Length: 125
Image 1 (cartoon, rainbow, N blue to C red):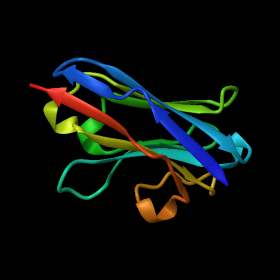
Image 2: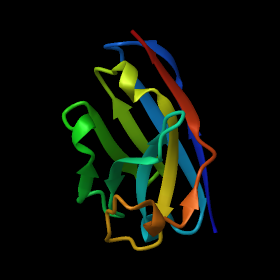
Image 3: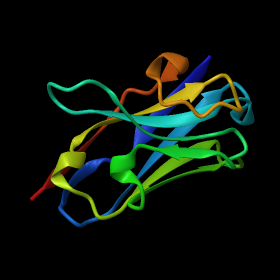
Image 4: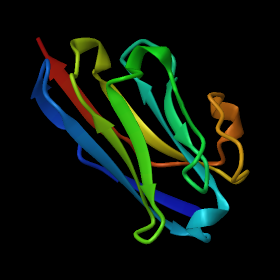
């Protein structure tokens, strides 16, 4: 089992920055890769970013490349999503996920085994 708890969401203005955190517990932190997904009202859940267990491999959806950065601190069992230059279209509930394949960085939600409860990010124009 892996427990994931997100924090750091909030209401910001367009152009602002936010950093989301996800604290993990349960299995050994380096035994899985991690990802962030988001879901806006009326839309399907969308992959945002992923990172392998070592942190070397990363993947982003095109719409956030150059603005968002995923990172992980294997000493703190925490994964981060630094979000800069936020846009209203980034408004969504953001979910942290864990994939028990430590070497895979997947954009498919079916590849992820555990999910956090989500944190709301709202970007006003």
